[in-house]
Image: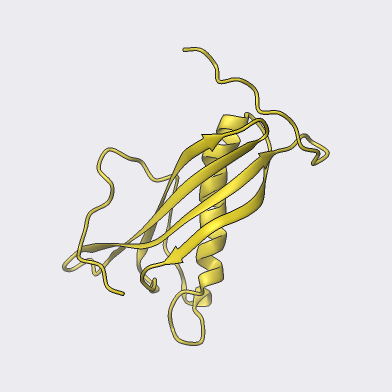
Length: 135
């Protein structure tokens, strides 16, 4: 279950960076998986919302893999990339990396997930995604 030391994805910017606090721990002393899932959902919604040009709602967690535990004090970076755009849905891939041990820095991939969002209007009713703007 261990990954070799790695680095943050070169040339990519995280959509979210956060440091878990003691209140985010489970009884075993690791960061609670639900906390990570919540942050992944937020991170995935960022590019989905931008592409949909408005509100989105999570409709599916297609896959979710915890590769390593996260600890208090880790700097956790969430990278999100759109995989597919449908008529009203957007599927997003999220990769999560933890930067740990500041004295001798190590970066490990801790989680990967794929989520699907649907574009909704102000009343929460499904709507079509507008065409991509032409540059």
